[in-house]
Length: 302
Ligand code: KIV
Image (cartoon, rainbow, N blue to C red; front, side, top):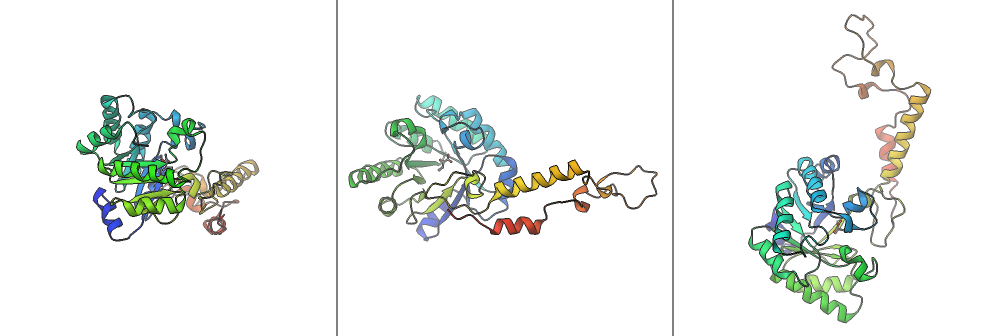
């Protein structure tokens, strides 16, 4: 996928799938999936660092995570989020942030809103860097919005949303994320724009969907917004595996003889050969792939 494919997919009526990703090992899983593209979102301040909002993300954090994701998913299109205020302190500061994310391996950047920084968006685009917009609920403005609330619930607010979306399109954005917007409003914006919209809590009449990796995989138990569908209860799979490992350690069932190295002079054939990976021969109460698949198929639908 490259930046032109976003437009092509909208023109051909194909939906774009996007997921957030913040680290190397998760990126390897996304790389091995059919997901179209990755967002290294500033939501990492919450999911990876435990902050209450995205306001604590910095350009240095975003660049570090972007670099890890780029190594794990080198063939995926990666969008890096410009963090809180990084594009509101002037052109030089904005371009320094863009430079850091692109050098770390992003193929595009995303920023929230448009009021007061349309010129900066245009300059980034004119510098050869694709820009994804983000309207509706813009979490970097959480305090200005009075909380994480659904936006554009009135005709007047949809009008504003539409004109901001047009402004971003005119400034050269290649796509726009619409977050927590009623489905009819998101449809209006999507139909008025040439470029694709990518929804999160914006209904089905958009050009694609984006969700947070941890949310899709059920790694964030207790987080159940209306728009979220959880596709696997991974938190439970991990907890069960860790408890099985703990039990085996405590009982002495792990490691088994076949999971132990033997010295070179040993004639005992029942122990692991040096070339064998220990996990291939484990016994004990190992959580089998079959039982994990069983748990994954008990998908929690929210
Ligand atoms: O930071 C993020 O994860 C995002 C998505 C929710 C769109 O901006």
